[in-house]
Amino acid sequence: MKHFFHPEALEEYLGAVSYYADISPRLATAIIQSVESGIEEILTYPEGWQTVEEGVRRYLAKRFPFDTYYCIESDRIMIYAVMHMSRDPKYWKSRFQPT
Image (cartoon, rainbow, N blue to C red; front, side, top):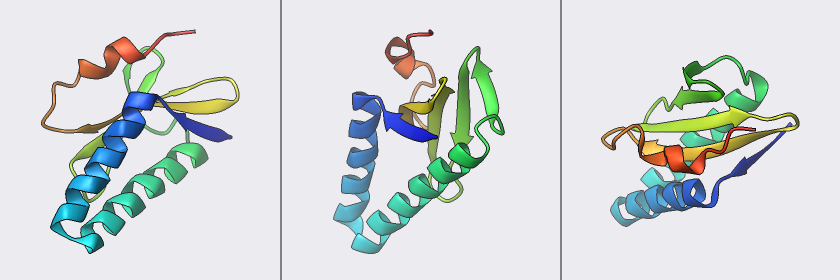
């Protein structure tokens, strides 16, 4: 199974990497590893994470305060948000178009 980012989710992810890179290149590498490891877990166990509403699940990062909101589609995982946990947990909903 493959994964794809909603364009705004990719912006969030890259923004987080940029933020941590300004602090330390090691932190930037660590957040990339954290998010990518989470995506690998999602791809391995797509139904293994909490359902937050019909069709949408949330993966909690292990080291950084970020959640990954995603949907299991027929042949892919669609990532709708890579969200800092301090944000309103519903801000990304306009991106999700149930099929």
